[in-house]
Length: 206
Image 1 (tube, rainbow, N blue to C red):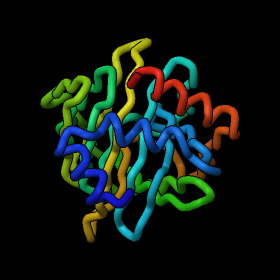
Image 2: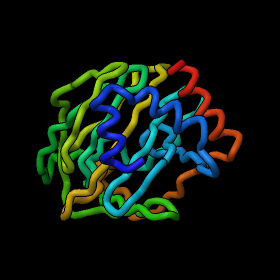
Image 3: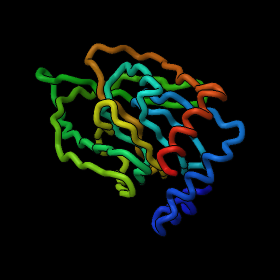
């Protein structure tokens, strides 16, 4: 289930079969409501590499966010769409002072949740390239690229997300200028809810 092994499965066209096998035996895994609007099934974390399944579904209301959906990762992303449609909306972020609309926040995550720390950077942004990906398609995103992942309203989608940390990079988010430092706790789904999330994905793949 390593990053490399899953990536190879995707490249050889075996993503669907791999996902069905994983979903059939999650063991004691508990899914998490991610503040970026999806349910995350964290399958593997090995040093700077990770493997997750991401689910967007009206069956699981999105967690509240205290900043915005515009963010960048400290890791290089490979995302494979298992079903549905995902729009990768790039944001063009420009440094600003008096006409700034947002502040850049650093997101420091651990087992207890996320610490949101305001930085001295104030910016404005505009929408850049919008890429749309459907079932069976794979896209990549380098660390440090501001973007948001959007699923059409009331849409259902799931992806395999592979991450590999890039040294010196940080997890960042854009938020209101006057938001103070704070901590948010990610809500874990219980065993029954996690099983329901797994069934939803599997039903779309069979």
